[in-house]
View (spheres, rainbow, N blue to C red):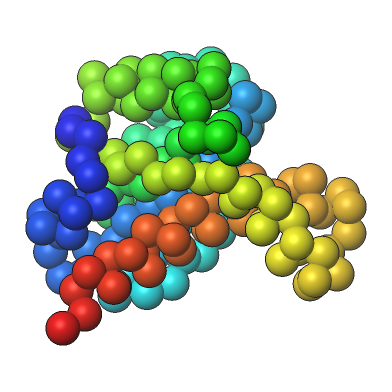
Amino acid sequence: MTTLTIEELAETLKPGQAIAGIDLGTKTIGLAMSDLSRRFATPRPVIKRVKFTKDAEVLLAFIEKEKVAAFVIGLPMNMDGSAGPRVQATRAFVRSMAEKTDIPFVYWDERLSTVAAERALLEMDVSRAQRKERIDSAAASFILQGALDRLSFMSAP
């Protein structure tokens, strides 16, 4: 497994390959998938975290089922741009996944993705209980959509 920049990912992706987004939380993992043209991010069901080994098994099954070519994982930077303990935990998670898969990971600054996801769910009049269940996958979708928009911009003539 390799960690790539978004530019390196753009060079390695082949047409028709889908990518996934991850919002890594302490209790859940939010997931999102792109369409095959890599234009739209769609939320997928949240994974309830147990321990790394079990979480990795679920992610590996997701990779197989969805034919994931790469992951865009949210990097929870502090608002001042510094890296806190959640950034260290995310990097450790990616290092651990490197031992289990060759799928590349791209770090994506996720500042305010959960806030944006919460606003979107509020605008859709989603109940508080449903928001709690869906917020992490909605945040993963925002993370992935940001990366998809960047990939699209980079490929524009």
